Length: 308
Image (cartoon, rainbow, N blue to C red; front, side, top):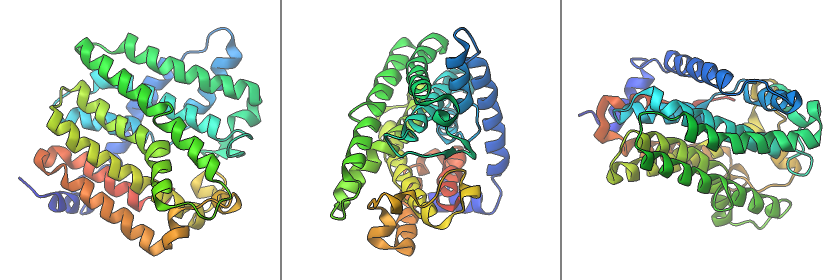
C-alpha cells in the first residue's frame, strides 16, 4: 500500500490527471443538473433557479460525493441524485449569501447575482425552491440503494444545512462583522459550519450510499473537515490576492466588512502553511484506500493550489 505522501506526489507528478478527471465528472454533473430541473409553470421561478444552478462553477461538492462513492466501491449512478442535490443546496447558499441583507454582492461566478437579474423577492424564493427540491430529488431519484442509507443521507444533509450547520455558521458570521476581537475559536466555528458542514456531508454521503463502515466514515469525516477548513483559508487568501475577473466575484469584501479572517490573524504566509498542514493530515486518513484514493487526494491538493 502506498503512503498518503507518495499518493499525493503521484498526483503532483501528473500520473493522476486531475484536470481530465474533473472535466469528466463535471460534465456528468452538468448533464444531470440540466435534466434534473426543467422549466415548468410558473416559468419565472424555474428560470431563476436554473440561472444560478447552471451558471458553471467548480462543482466541487458533487465531485467529492461521486469520488468518495467510487472509492468505496459504489457506482456513480447511485450517488448522482445526491451529488445534484448538494449543488442545488450550495447554489441556494450562494443566492442567499449574495443578497443585500447578507453579503450584498453584485457578481457570482463571473455573472450578475440572482437578485440583480430577478429581484430580491424571486431570488429568495429561488433559493428556497432549490433547497426544498434538493431533498425531493434525493428521495425520488436515488435507486438501487437500501432505504436506510438514503434516509441517513437526507438526515445528515438536513443537519448540515440547518441551524446546526450552514445557517448557524452564517448567523455567527453576521454577528461577528465589524468586531475586531473575534477569537480563533469563533472563526473556526463560523467556517466549520458555514463552509465545512456542506463539504463534509458531500464526502460522507458518497461513503454512506456505497455502504461504508463506521470506521471508514470517521476517516472520511476527518478528511472532509480538514479540507473544508483549508478551503476557507484559501478563500480568505484569494479575497486579498486574486482579481475579480479570475475569482468571478467581488474581491476585498472581507476587508470592507471588517471581518476577522485567517490572514488577518496570521498573515498570508502562515495561513497558506496551515492550509497545507490540514491537507496533509486529511490525506493521511485515506492511506488505507491505496490508489483508489487518488481522486480525493488530488482534490485536496487542488483546494490549496487553486487561484479561484
